[in-house]
Length: 154
Image (cartoon, rainbow, N blue to C red; front, side, top):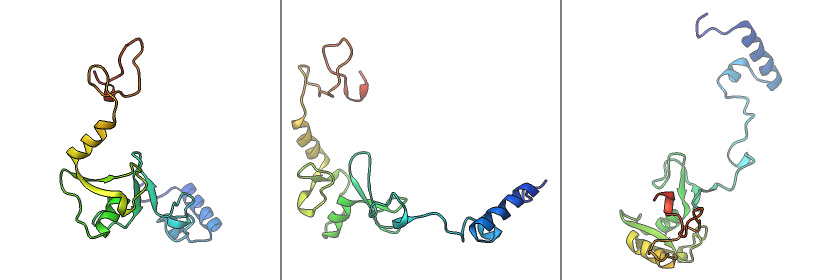
């Protein structure tokens, strides 16, 4: 049997499915026409075009053609707010800092442009260090007097 040919059983099943959905077999085969899947704002997981990534930053739907968009059409909300206020996109070695440390608070008043070095220094001052000068991760090794190294490496 050629790859383009289908078995009689498969053809019968497609005809039965098309009858059940109220469309033609051609519409059923190419996945269009019967429109039985909810998408966009009709989908049960729609959150007003917002996604919160694993680091806690909010991404908003801006469309694939937007200059700040990723491959699926979402951009970080704080970058969109920053650029919409007339500022240029942060360059290499720069980033947008949330003044009140709340990554979901993307008001323009809460955002400031800073260098990566100054940002790291700001946050490193807040971290606790051990006797040896290393940062605590909050996890103790089994039977050890000191905390685990960041990332689990030693």
